[in-house]
Image 1: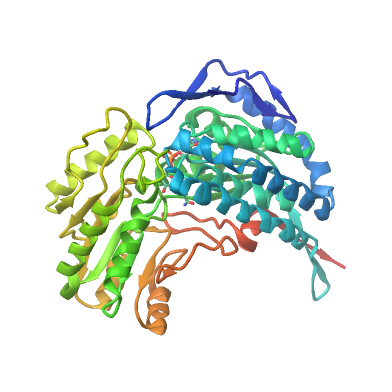
Image 2 (image 1 turned 180 degrees about the vertical axis):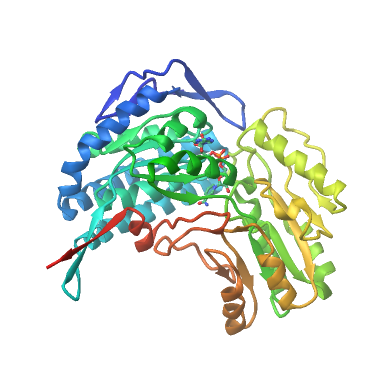
Length: 471
Ligand code: NAD
């Protein structure tokens, strides 16, 4: 049992003002695995005040010293990586086959790059009679989702530390435990009091209070587009900087000349990892009409091969959905898809042997029209829509016919052609022929997928104010 009865504020574990405790459930067993405080507005006040007090000293701390704290946190995370991965499997349900590499080792790589990038804060550009200098934006508030919890948190915390910002973090109600373990690690690095503060609690209370707060200079929010709009509205009167990392409905464009088996395998696995609870999931597979029937067969074969099971079983590719509510949402979309006229190729087989846990079989919809709601709305579950196209011009048009623009992918035999297609897709990322995620590259969305960029140099830029000194 992971009990965290206190909040981390101003460098110490403090009794919360908010009454009550939030229980955290293991989605595979439905048992309680931890408890965290239900913070409230008074806790936000204390945390923001601590971050404000710490800002002057931290922002003037040499970048090399700030880099040293980031390096120390990298070490803490490396030593505690197994514990962190086990905790995330327990609170999220991601199988052990993936959890350590995807949820912990990758984010550590992302964090570590800011050891070097902190020095960028010292760069001065001369233009005419001006010196253009970089300064940290100030006190930051971070509101995070549950699906890649450490990744989301480090994507904000790492550049903020490098820039010289202080922060208040609100993790998701579903998966807050990793943030408490991280706070312990941060405490062990000896980071100055008030630089990092942690307040758990409901979005409508703690999240809104952070978004509204006049002493918060930057709000970085990752979550659904609906909640992102609400926090942006709450933040508007104080004119703080608002960075939004929101939902997606990303296309995988499989070209006429593609290795169909490899492309379809990649596309199915990309959607089904983390049970489809991935913002960048390539949930619309665009297929050349003349190869559509062949692709459907390949997709069914690959989907049936993926093992759904206990996250602690190393054979499991998919675990349960994170919560009962998330499973219900996905089941509603499975019903909707059928009503809209799409054909469910697999996903409705009985769930024998799963007495407990929010399990759901991976599902494929064929004969999907891109205008259907199942092709336009983010389902956030293991559901892939297979959409035929007549020619590549139509494929590009279908790919871009979405309110979202977070990620995209292209699979084609000819590298030049693949790059040409990638350039036409309106999304913040494009993966060609299964290329790997790159923590040094900027990550973020077009359109209703958001307006921010995380990771790499662009991730640091979010936390920077630019000053021109005329001399
Ligand atoms: P969510 O929007 O329900 O919640 C995200 C966070 O916002 C939580 O901490 C929640 O408590 C808080 N919140 C909710 N309503 C709020 C309000 N009115 N004011 C302030 N805070 C509020 O999202 P979720 O279900 O936790 O996560 C899934 C969503 O996140 C999906 O849409 C997914 O695509 C998106 N996501 C995006 C990215 C990205 O980088 N673009 C990454 C991961 C997840």
